[in-house]
Amino acid sequence: MTEKEKMLKQQLYDANHDTDLKLERVKAKELCHQYNQLSPADEQGQQKILYQLLGKMGANCCITAPFWCDYGYNIELGENFYSNHNLVILDCGKVTFGDNVFVAPDCGFHTAGHPIDYERRNQGLEYAYPITVGDNVWIGAGVQVMPGVNIGSNVVIGGGSVVVKDIPSNSVAVGNPCKVIRPITEDDKKTYWDR
Image (cartoon, rainbow, N blue to C red):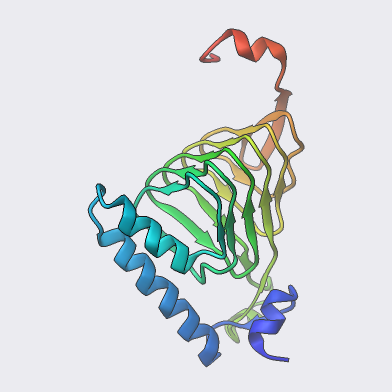
């Protein structure tokens, strides 16, 4: 089994010394670099690179530069996806976003993790667990989503949160570690800002 096959099957794999994975990362980072150098007004050029880079992209998607990822082909964006500056997606595992997802600045989605024991970690071994984000989700500024997390639909994740466990649909969650603090209700339609 190749290291890439191990990666995609959520097994420990060698990301640091495998030539094929290194080449794939360089290709993705070259496309990210090109993307990040484009004029903000060059929407056509941005879309062209994203179609080359990403595994799937719905209509009306916008990623505000700078943007970085590991492979690109493991990223799937639903329709009406928007991310602000400094999005990082470590997509060794699949990262799937539903429709109408808004991501604030300085957010990261990290499928990659490393063994706790230093012997295997020092060998360059890691694992990759997929991340899934449902429909109609708002991710606040500075949120970090860790390997294997599923975020339901109709969710708001408060700024600065570190999401290490699944978040159910129809909820507001915040903190480090991120926890549900309340459900989203009809009363939320009556105000534009909760204090």
